[in-house]
Every structure is written in C-alpha cells, then in structure tokens.
Length: 471
Ligand SMILES: NC(=O)C1=CN([C@@H]2O[C@H](COP(=O)(O)OP(=O)(O)OC[C@H]3O[C@@H](n4cnc5c(N)ncnc54)[C@H](OP(=O)(O)O)[C@@H]3O)[C@@H](O)[C@H]2O)[C@@H](O)CC1
Ligand SMILES: [K+]
Image (tube, helix red, strand yellow):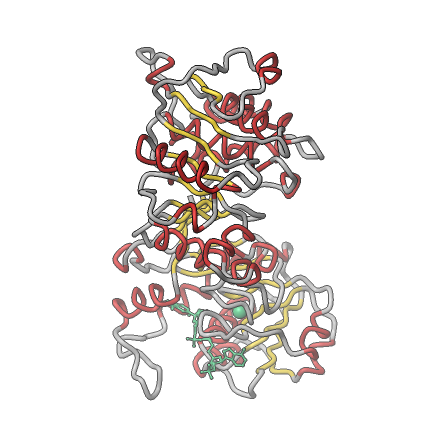
C-alpha cells in the first residue's frame, strides 16, 4: 500500500526535527543541512542507477531558488565524486548557498539557459518542490530539455503536490523524500515511477494520510474468503434491482458482476426477465432476506415515487450499492446512507453536488470527499483513477488502478454487482468499493483488450484465484 501526505503534513514532520522556520528567513533553528544531504544522497544514488555506467557522463541541474534546488546542487556535488560532469542552471541567478558552494568545490560548473542546449545524458529537475505553485514550465527550459531523460527532485516542477490536476514538467523518474505526495499517486503520467528516499520524517505523528493506494497484495490480504463454516446465507445474499425496458442489459451485467465476485445467493428483484435466468440458473426470483442490495443500474427514468419507495425500503433494511439512475439528489436526500455505497462517475457526481463536471474532473479526490460528507455515504468515484471517500474520514482510498479498456458502457454495472456481493459478505462500504474496483482493474490488466464487461466479469474468479494463491 502506498500512502500519500499533504504538504502541510510534510512540513510539520520536518518542523518536529528542525523546529519551526523563521518567518522572515525561512530557516529553521535546527537546520544543520542533515535532511537535505540525506535527500540529496538518495537522489544521487537514483541518478547513478539511471546513468549506469555513470563515469564520464554529463548531467544538467535545473536549480530553483529554494530547498528543492538545494537538493539538486548537493546531489550534483555527490555525482562529481563519481566522475560525472555537472552543469547547473540557476533559474533566478542564485541557488541554495551551501549546496552551490559544495557543487563548485567538487568541480561542478554554472551555466546559463543557452548552456542547457549542450548535449547531456540526464536532467535533474530541481526548480520547485513542495513549495512550488502550479504552472507550465518556461518554454526555453522545456526546449532545452528536449527528449533528455528527466529525474524530478521531490515532484516535477510546476506540479502542485496536493493536487490531482496535471501541470508542469514531465519526469521519467521522481525521487521523493520522507513520504509520497498526493500528486505522485494522482499524476503518474507526469511523475513516472516514484522512488521514496527515507529521511527520518515521522509522518504518522501528523495524522492520517491524505490518500492510500492499494496494491494487489493488499487486496489479497483483505479479501473476505469464506470459511468451512459458511453457507450461502452467511456468505451473503444480494438483492438486485437493475435494468429496465430501455436498458435490459444492465440486469445481466450486474448479475454477472455479483455472481463472479462470490455472492452466496442472488435475488433478481427487478422487472423479472426470465430469459436471464437461463444463463444464470443459480439466481432466484423469490423475495426474502438480503444482506445487501443493488439498485439503480440501468433504471433509466424510473418513476420518482416508485424509485424513492424502493430506495427508502432497502436503505432501511441493509447496506446498499446505489448506482447510475439512483444517484439523483432528489432520490438520495433524507435516506440513511451511513452503511451504503454510491458509485457515480464524474458526470453523476457533478449532478449530485450541483457543480460542473470539469470541477469534479479537476479535483476528483476533493469532490468525492465532499459528496461523502454531503450525503453521509461512502462514495466510489469511477474513472481512469478511482477514489473511495468515507464520510468523516480524512483518508481517501485509491483502488488498484487498471487499464482504460474498462472505460465502456456496462463496466459500471458489473462493478456495482461486484461491490454489492462484497457488501453482502459483511465488509464495510469502503472495503467493498476498494476490493470490487481493484478486482475489476486487476482482471482488465490480466486480459488487456476490448473484452465486453460481462466477459471480463467471467474472468474475476481467475484473478481472485491467482491473488489468493499468493496470500
Ligand atoms: N520538507 C522536508 O522535509 C524536506 C524538503 N526538502 C526539499 O525542499 C523542498 C521544498 O523547499 P522550499 O520550501 O524551499 O520550496 P521550493 O519547492 O524549493 O520552492 C520555493 C521557491 O520557489 C518559488 N516558486 C514556486 N513555484 C514557482 C513558480 N511556479 N514559478 C516561479 N517561482 C516559483 C517560490 O516563490 P514564492 O512562492 O515564495 O514566491 C520560492 O522562492 C522540497 O520539495 C524538497 O525538495 C529536502 O531538502 C529535505 C527535507
Ligand atoms: K522539482
């Protein structure tokens, strides 16, 4: 599991080691340069690995006015000891004093932006780190970098650390310090792979992380595997009301998702279409006790009064997954959704919050968190990267990311079915969302290509078997 922290948390953890920085000079009383040299040593080691063999190669440093530039300068001094040629471009004509002195002592040189056009093997981006504001890079610098591989110091410059929005330089590798920042997990295309260098920050003391990204092993460890004592009722019965005359396939898709995720039993409680049951003979039409419900997928414009009655009854009875056409504020308001899961995509979440879709897409994590608090429900915001927000909790969960092949009609219905099956096992809404979304993503990664959602769902058991074999 990767955890990501806010800039404020990183700064507070740093201050517990070095003291609060002087507001005038920005210098902390206990700052003897130790943290920076630790960071720079880790950065230099990563660059040496990238260059291998390093001796005789040339590295350009992009150096900003703050400590991010200091890290780059110190790393340059360390690289000099391995016979790497180092040229530093000081963006504002100045650089971290001790770092610059160390680089010059070690035989590094300072160059202007024209000098950056000379051939080099690698660029270290030390313009701005967590003190950076979002913005696109200076065109002259971007041109000088061209196709040369870039290693970003802490974060790619111009990418705001706390944000999900893309901007700034693009890196082939990002070397970060103390803990991941939100942008590392939400902007993998900008950051490239991220390497974490431990510098001794106690981030746990600053409160819960802002974001947790799940990995396959975490999914395997958390999966609710049935025990010898389980039977179909204890494994969980799911009631599903999905589909309509206009969207008949939604029922089939939701059933496929729930069945292949391991529901103990499924009751098909929507407008019964018995032809479905030929394909899913274990699904029953009989009403009865359910441990979880799924409502809304493929409802179309169902009559408000009927929809509201169904949602009120079901949310009063058991945890629910509410999807698609059930995600209207007029249907949701006033329901007790405290143990339920809402599964909107960006457009649906925008409608729920009464904002533009672009606002949700710009800061999806914040939007999911706001919706969780507004509706008192766990939210799974679907998309290329997915976010699970729990009401009252600071930490947002990111299920295992998957390929974009799942971005097609019907994927949401199978996912809702998967989440409902998990909810019926007794796991909470957050875990049901994370596990369901991760299962779909891992399966899509194992079977890349334009596989229809119901066919992809048929592979869920194979993915699970492989995952659990590793546990
Ligand atoms: N915290 C830790 O534990 C450790 C931190 N370490 C390192 O320190 C880094 C943070 O350093 P930092 O605070 O000095 O800020 P940094 O990112 O260098 O930038 C500040 C300067 O840039 C300027 N500026 C910003 N954006 C701009 C823009 N778009 N365009 C133009 N100017 C812009 C900004 O100007 P201002 O906003 O003040 O006007 C200010 O002058 C951190 O990322 C890590 O690398 C490690 O050494 C070890 C431990
Ligand atoms: K940087």
